[in-house]
Amino acid sequence: MSLQISKKTLDGTTHCPNKFMCLTEGKCANCRIEELIPMDGVSIHGDRPEGDCPYLISFRRSWFCACPTRREIYRCYGQ
View (cartoon, rainbow, N blue to C red):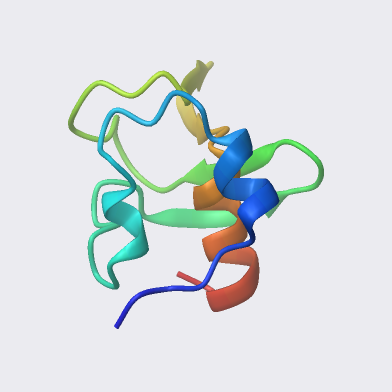
């Protein structure tokens, strides 16, 4: 089942190295989300996710995902 994300969000995700793999349900295993960060992104649970993504940001001992598509997936579907 594909997840439905707004065209505006998809158009704003200009640096996706994974060709929007996260839109296929169950393909977001690399970024297990811990919580939504208002206006910024989502925090990622655990160690650094695998892969090389330009939306991945390190802050102290935590990891954050600033991908607009990933944020909308979490906001709309809780995953």
